[in-house]
Image 1 (cartoon, rainbow, N blue to C red):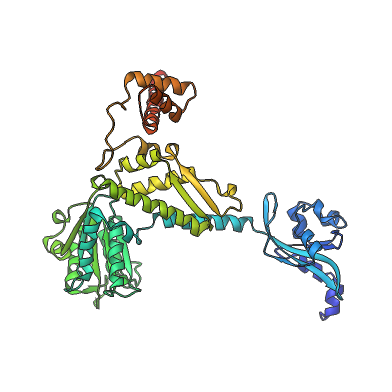
Image 2 (image 1 turned 60 degrees about the horizontal axis):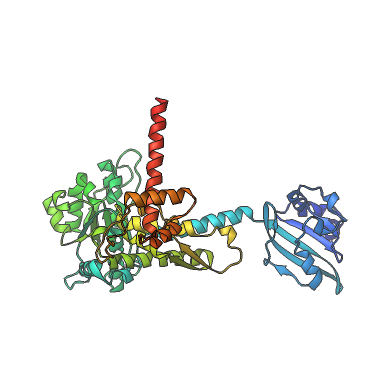
Length: 485
């Protein structure tokens, strides 16, 4: 039998097709009475479709988009998403006309809960990547203080008349070595020393525990060079025409000779190959160690044509820290704007800002950035509480700052000296503990102390209470452990 239009519409085929679509389908008459429901729609509600047909759609979908179409006789396309817990739908609804007469409406909808959750996760990941990626947009942060002089020196690496040079960057972990390498890379593109699409290849050399694997990764390999080996480009080839950034370069002692040969000759040879490949690569080596004491003298001499040292965050002025603080806050606001399409305003209370700027950061700029991001996270509303808002302001207070950042205030250059009468004596400590035990928070306790003639800042009361609670918890744990023994 041949399938014809008449057979198709007169048979049950159309119902089989509609029942096997991915979306739910509802059809209503002009009064909103369901005249057709496919299996997908019925299954969403754990209903049988024969129990739904002949009843008003609002009994099953109280906020049905179809109700609006019945009123205005106009389609609604991808405009409304409504909830039938726990599902979320995107709906397309259309009016039905026959010979110009309005006969009813139908909707095609799809459960997008999983898609919505996936999109939310992707946006979250994109935002986290944006907040933690290496700083390539740091020019406005380096216009003052220590970084201003270092950046001027860094420009000479690629911008001097004698041509681009190799270089070394040293400094403690988190001081901004990768940031500086990115600045050099962007400046080199800006002045045309390398092409606009030139590569920037970064590798952490500490990940190589086997010198043979390290050599293969850096210089590449050919098929058959060793058991299971394949033809592979090394990092030098990938970085050709651009910059190769060797982080933790002090760990490459096992293959320094190969690196030296590549830098001196401008040629590399893949492992297992006899053919030499020309390369044009600017090498930047970064390390937390003194590379003069680690590298071969010849390799150090070739790389250290320009050597820059980045000071630890504790060695920088308060003005520089404030500049970094503003940058990271603005970066968070921009990341939210890009990911959520929301104008986001972050305000730190004076006490919270003081604590951030005066904390001790063993991991330097990276840790300061993470503390700022964590503090803003802690003060921010949940996504589900935002609703349709397009502009939000959040206030970061002391309670939002991680304890490890708030508990170790550091005296820095240009910070205000502590007043001689703002120290917490034993008598004041007892008063703070008593008031806190009665239910008062740091702010109210600070106001009471000020009225008594002891102008102790709110954040110092908060520091004291946090330390005191931790000390009590530690003592309780020791007592419990001793009892159990």
